[in-house]
Image 1 (cartoon, rainbow, N blue to C red):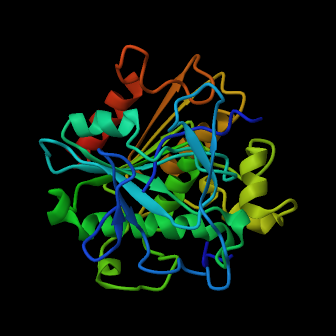
Image 2: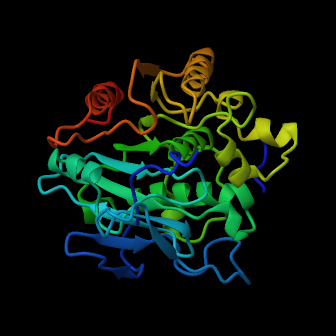
Image 3: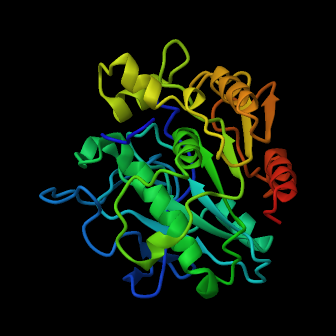
Length: 320
């Protein structure tokens, strides 16, 4: 794309908020380090009055099992590794672009990475329906800013700025894909020294991702929320990841469950086909069963095998 303008089980994911010297930081929970992405009003927010709003995802769920239908203050939550090995990961939650499904404190997935020496950053990003001037590019602005802030804060978080990966889940997988496809195309004007940092992740993970905005495989909710009720074919193609893989795309790991009834596995198949056609180092894993949002941390506390497969893949490309 030359310029960036402007089912219920889709509400899934992981992730939230970040920190950098000079940027206001708050404590959401004893173990949570949160940092706002932008020093003032986010890009294209002048004149808007968007306030952060949360809802419980389940009446019987724990207090922090929340989602954000409105995000006025995009941020990251940092799960610091007790014994950092220098690697870091940006985790991008899903929610069908209608809300962001992430708690205030680090998730199980973030804590899992931190326990392995990998500092995790969970992203709380803005949603197009709140009227940001950038429209569908507002979430991408936040993801790009997050990557730059992570690298700018490398000394603070004891990470290697060359070893920052990104993983997205469901609609967050689409945002992760956009991050990978626009490594040479910033979605906002630079604000400060942090914006001199690279955007490109060393490796990318797309877990049960939304990929296409084109029927018949598009996830209807994500398409409507991102592009509107009746987007033109040109607009839908511009935001379909499988149509826009550049030569600069990071090495990408894609995984899905064949029986996913919310986001069709053909999204991942289309993405992998496009990655291969573009000559991008890539790997595809399709499970027979699991549905949408297969539990990534089991009841026994053990991570899904997909995480180990991703780690092995990303390690080959310099992450670990």
